[in-house]
Length: 326
Ligand code: SF4
Image (cartoon, rainbow, N blue to C red):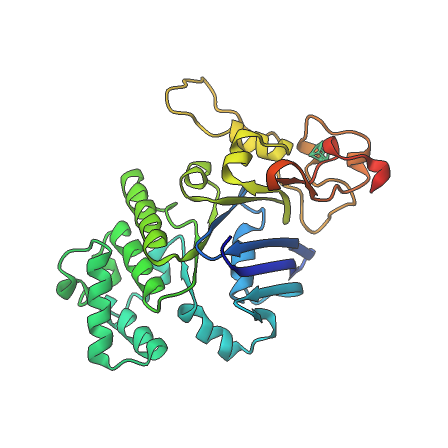
């Protein structure tokens, strides 16, 4: 088994708002081994993106990581100074965001935005950094690298920009790439190309990946291991094949049921009724209780904990637990 690269333990990220404290990431733990792709999946507002931003200490100003540990390659990232975290971002951990247009600076050329970080992180001369940028652009299947480096972001298509973001993320040979909905803003054919590219990168460089997505099609294609989040908590996790073949948690089952299947015509797609609860006002109950067709009395008074099921799969649900033993 490969070495452990990232181990997140009991991560707690809260936001301070006028309506109260929002527990956006609530006691979340997961791990990524070298060369492994872990997908965090869930609806909007389930805490998956805030989990990724917490790892990189990029959460908005009114948010705070208030508990837990983020152990990466032997260091707890929460103990590092802002300067050290900045050095780590881009050097050992690359990030790809959903909207490449908003991640790149519109007033600088692609070359300026690639070459400077390469120079800074890899301590290369401008000439060597330019050469590396050219190689990366070409490797990612973008023709005319010499022309591309002189263009501004608005002169490129969404798919091209996402390739540039991937090139920037890869430029310092990171051990881990965190990609937050990297294909959501792209059309389907470009989505497939970007996923192929990420898979090739993983194969060629043995890079680990943390992929944040709401799209179970992306999960099926990319993940080795899946973490399902709901209302800031992990409700189920396991190896991708097990989780798709034998989902246990009613929320995971609902997500899988809601996924369109090619060749199956339905008048209406299945949806999980109800909404994610208000994260300011959480009770002691299972957070999914108001939407769950299996909810029992205990679900409304006591939170289930993640419990190991078959083949490394874990689920937090009273359907599989004896309430008296908790
Ligand atoms: Fe449903 Fe109860 Fe399981 Fe929560 S603990 S998912 S309410 S059955």
